[in-house]
Length: 137
Image (cartoon, rainbow, N blue to C red; front, top):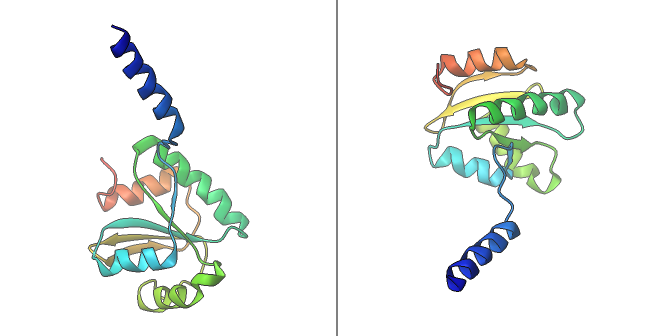
C-alpha cells in the first residue's frame, strides 16, 4: 500500500513540474512555418505583430475559438528580425505578399485554400472555418 501511495504521490509531483496548456495560440518561428508548407501540412495560420493593437485584440478572439473547439492555430510574428529573410520567402512564395495585419490563412496540404486579411469577430471566424471544415458543423 505504501508503494502504491508513493508512486501516486511521485506522479502527482512530476505532473506539477510540466506546463500543460490547453489550447493556446502556438507561436512558431518563420523557418518552422516554412517547413510546414514544404511538408504539405494542413493548418490554420495567423500572421500578425506584437506591436499591432488590432492583432492583439484578434488574438483574444482566436484564444476564445481555441478554448471552445480545442484546435491549434499557428501564430507567425512577422516582425522577428532574425527571421527576416525567411519571412520574406514566406511572404512572397506562400502568403501572397501579406498586405494587411492581422491575416488568417487556411492551409491544406501545403497550399493556401483561403485567406482573410481582416479582424473577425468570433461568429464570423467560426462560420468561415466551418465552411472549409476546419471546425465541426
